[in-house]
Amino acid sequence: MSRIQEEQVKHVAHLARLAITEEETKMFTEQLDAIITFAEQLNELDTTGVKPTTHVLDMKNVLREDKSAEGLPIADVLKNAPDHEDGQIRVPSIIE
Figure 1 (cartoon, helix red, strand yellow):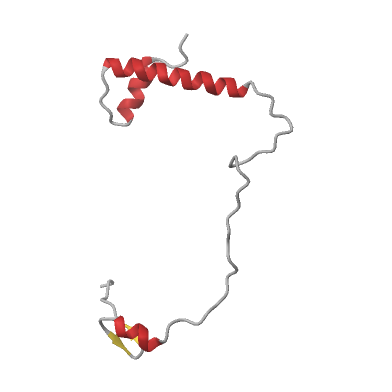
Figure 2 (tube, rainbow, N blue to C red):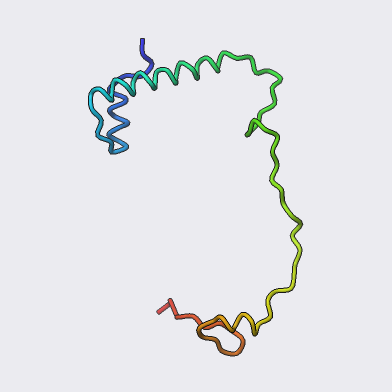
């Protein structure tokens, strides 16, 4: 017996705003049933003693130390600014 019904597939397609044919409904029902069957097989595995993981490879983010550094000279920054005054970049007002 199928673990998912055609009505459920049609309902999900409707929620996703997808127009699917009767043939597609049958195909998706079979495919989803196969996926559910495989997931149930995974539930049968004995995972006692297996450490939880978020990735199959032992990967870590490579981060550099956060060090402060000299910024650009103000004169060089202001050269590229279309409008500036008193060492500050002027921008259009967005608040009325």
